[in-house]
Image 1 (cartoon, rainbow, N blue to C red):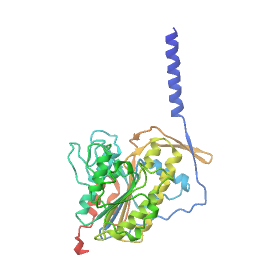
Image 2 (spheres, one colour):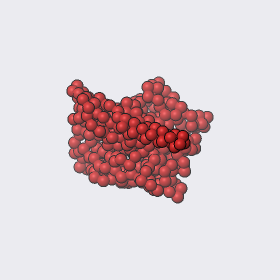
Image 3 (tube, one colour):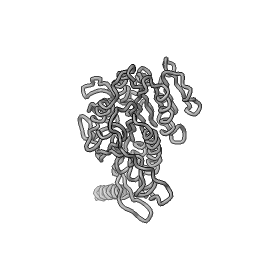
Length: 376
């Protein structure tokens, strides 16, 4: 009798815990008047190929993340940076073996056009090495750069230079960055690098004390944290993206470059089911995309594409309560929720409608300027 009673009590406690978790709502303040909404851009490019390709990844960012950002940053009619972009599409993403996908398989799809096994970086599902977009664009005279608020050896940035059968082999990944032809890489990850073996690469640890207007090094790696960059303890995505763009503007051999910039920790905050932290990371990402769009809007040779690798947290937007949006996380992992792609600049129309992650790679590659340096 006592055992049955104990079992009953345990079951009741367990079910109560589930009920509390499933009914625990967060509250996010809805912004009111006072913040000016940035203007939408018009897609008016009819000819030409992009000599500058900038791809921004909001790791873990689903459609509900950007919707909540819109409510919180400026109100229901506010333009997030992606709202300014005239071409929008929906993205299909899954790994080789399952509907669920991690950042390694997703980034490999984005960087190489190859659907692969979760945890693989730069390899197909049979562990064959597949070329990535920085390697292929390099053959066309493009200079490449990377930015991440995580470690530079983390899955997403790693897919743009590394080829390993586990995303967790970060020391090996770091060695491959040093051996790669990526010209500028800014982020965290000092712990994973052998700093005594970086011949031919200038390594810096402080973004504020390096003059990017007078760069003399052919290759530059910035390591601003032991692992990921803790918010407020190192440079923001915006600051690193500005620096990397400046480096590429000065140092691109053919006037052509590719830059990937990742807002890595939107994902981390979503894994923690922390709305406040997620919105802080999303705000940095949003500011970064706005900066890039303002840069591109003054040119006719720059293609900007924004997307995500997967949605994290299963973020649900439930209702309005007074001046707040009620939200709820449905998982602390990755979900199957929809992600999107946004584009602006020459060739952006290619990204409308339903787009698979592998097609983002192939579309960027096909749109690139294939004229030789001597022809530019």
